[in-house]
Amino acid sequence: RSAQCTRWGPNGGGYSQALWVTFSELCFVGLALSPSLFFGKKIVGGSLRKLARNCAPAGLVFGIKYATSHLALRITPASIYALLHCSIVFFVVLSSWLVLNETINFFEALACCGLILGTAIISVSSFSHNAQEQSSVSVFGITLTLFDCALGGVVIVLLRQAMLRNKRALQVTCFKTLIGAVPVFPLALFIHGLPTPPSMHQLYIFIIVALIILIYHSVLSALCAIAPAVVVAFIEALKTLPSFIIIAIVRGVPETSNLFWLGAIVVLASALFFKIVRTSRSSLFRAFTNSRQSCDEDDDESQQPNRAVLTPPKIYETDEIEQDV
Image (cartoon, rainbow, N blue to C red; front, side):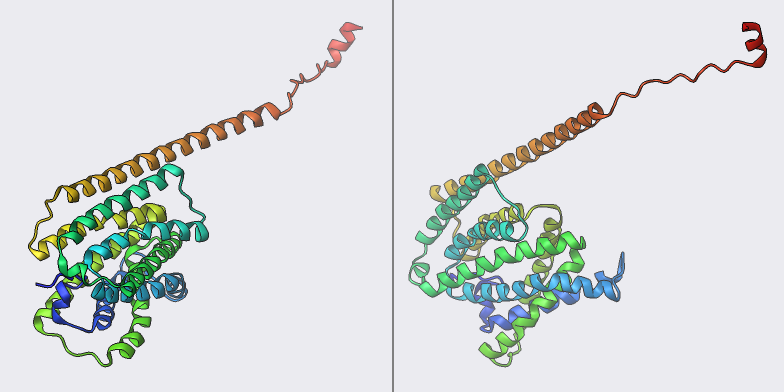
């Protein structure tokens, strides 16, 4: 049984043209989500062009990133790929600071380091139990995986930017995947040549994985609309824990070593710590904002001049004047 576990099944079900798989899956997801353009608030004319223009940067980078991940998973052991995938948090922090001006504090950075440490412990546990993976590590594979993670960080930030302008998760995902398929097509044609038809078993795997991609990226777009890019990246990096469990199931070897569970505990503790710090930071920010607003209102009231109450002059009638005289 193959030790490599890719995003379209163990060793791709024997299908060797990875980029054509990428192109097919992106087209499948985009076409499957295209009916969303005709439900709810319809997008026509200028709105359609505006949405496509907003999604174009995220879509182009996403297409290259997804193709890179398929190639990286072909030559990189799954445990090493999952470990390096945690570096997406670093790239998102850097990209969100440059593009969206979103920052993190010291304690949130500490939680991110804990996440990477826990994933490293899990990776060592998984890597040490597989001799085939130990012999298949290459510098090119590690470099390609890190490039994939860098593109993934940029995609999350650009997707966050697109969702802030268009809060329509399904429609943004539709355009993102269709636009992402554009740069993949010439790459697949250049590297693999014309596609060969897959077998029924391979086609079944492709469809199942494409449906998972549809659900996953729709949820990811929705998260980018309601949460900062760093929070989305932290959730994205957390998926390495179930990834190792799936890898173990595919191999038929349960990961029950103490080292594995230690890494899992560190990952979950880091996630909980990040959640606590982020929640307290939001609460403090709201409290500071409310107190600042109340102070401003008090200052405005104190700066208003005291208006003297002017009583209208007494108007005497003619008869009253004569009596006074």
